[in-house]
Figure 1 (spheres, helix red, strand yellow):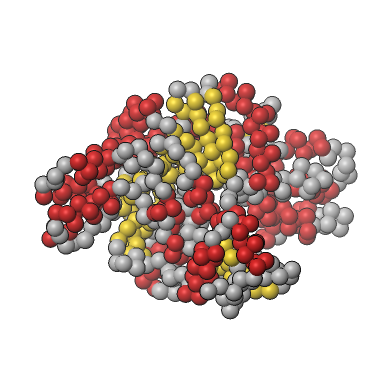
Figure 2: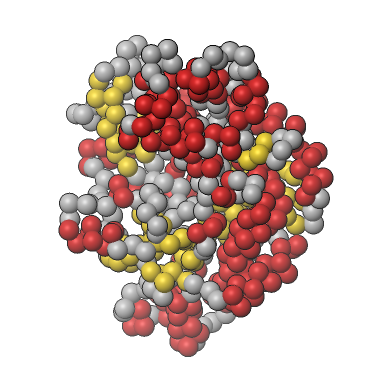
Amino acid sequence: MSNFSENDLKQILKKGIEETKILDQIETFKEGIPFVRLEAAAIVSHGISKFSKEEEAQLIHKFEGRKKGSSLLKFVPASGAASRMFKSLFNFLETFDPKKDTLASYLKSPSNKDMKVFFDGWSNFPFYESIKSRIEGKAHTKEEEAYFFVEEMLLSEGLNYGFYPKGLLPFHSYGSYASTPFEEHLKEGAKYANAADDAHLHFTISEQHSALFKLEFESIKERVSKETKTNFHVTYSYQKPATDTIAVTLENEPFRNSDGSLLFRPGGHGALIENLNEQFADIIFIKNIDNVVVPRFANKVANSKKVLAGLLLKVQATAFRYAKMLDNESMSAEQLNNMKRFLEDELNARLSESFSSFSIEEQIRILKDKLNRPIRICGMVKNEGEPGGGPFWIRDRSNHLSLQIVESAQVDMSDTEQLNIFKNSTHFNPVDIVCGIKNHKGEKYNLLNFVDVKQGFITQKTKEGRDLKALELPGLWNGGMAHWNTIFVEVPIATFNPVKTVNDLLKPAHQKK
């Protein structure tokens, strides 16, 4: 029984959240979310596949041969704000006084090393010429020039990049124009998510930026279509208000704003499983908005995606054939054993050691359950110190073993054994995923049925000076896909080029030459 007032219930109804879901969330706060139990790091030969050049060529050929009969979609989470890219620049505006300080002494300080990199390379940024022309004649010293440049770049009186979504910032310079990550995803999509000269892309964005994205598409559509000989079909969606989660006090009571209303917070990128669940393509490529490259690296990136898609088609064909057999034929023990071997060897599923002692009917039930799941092929890059989740074998609450992408926050780092397993990870997750979301009959799975709701995150925040606890939903590629059939594949580090800070734009993958 809830203690929600009439006004609370109206607020809940308006957001489209079921009251029972909110009560479940409060219960989750009370119980806490257990740490994931790591069994071992996934490595090449034990959880991560690695292909020879010959094998890669065969998989690319399989994808190229089959894509014309398949619907393809590139799904790009793109709601991220650019403000975090400019943390050091905002700090520069707060701490540097162009009338009192010298730029040379400011940049000598180790704490300002990011700004030294910025100014040493600033002429190589795609927005350099534009900003220089906008502040021309304003500055009388190099200190003022540096300060006015950053001010013009970030603040609302200037270009307002500090407000922009990351997807619409200029990333790459092509002389007469600068391209955004949004544009680069179109170009990249034309290389592998293109069937019969049509490419379909779906971007999840913040509603407040909707008009900006649509304006950008209209302004570049003709040029990019002509350049790539591709017709682009672009759709958008927003994170649903119904995926927001309730905040609570440290005593696990609903947190209330100063006006007495309930406080709800966005559920994190795990909420996007709802958006993904509304897509119907046969093959879906998932990649973050800031992971793009200039053209000289584009073919390597595209071929890597084709390898993953070819592997999806290969294992899916076998999975579909077995699922049809289970629906329509009486099975011999040998056939059932072949299916078990396929699930374990190819799809990394783990079945009970007692499986062979079960009745035929029970074996069929288990195999049907394991085969009839969405499939994800996840690229993994060698760990070179980048932050982010990694591939692991985990043991769940029912003692089942499975392959999962795990974030550091999900692991009990005070447990020496768990810490050592996490540190021994050889690869990390670049968010490079190819999905098959339909069954052997062509019916789309309800992806919400394959989420592990116990893989969310509880964090502590403040609002109006008061402490609160917030709940993030299971991450899209973490608990959001926990019960999918999962294959990890090593992909080249060259396919991973995210822009987390503005200085990342100075790296070779983002420079024309």
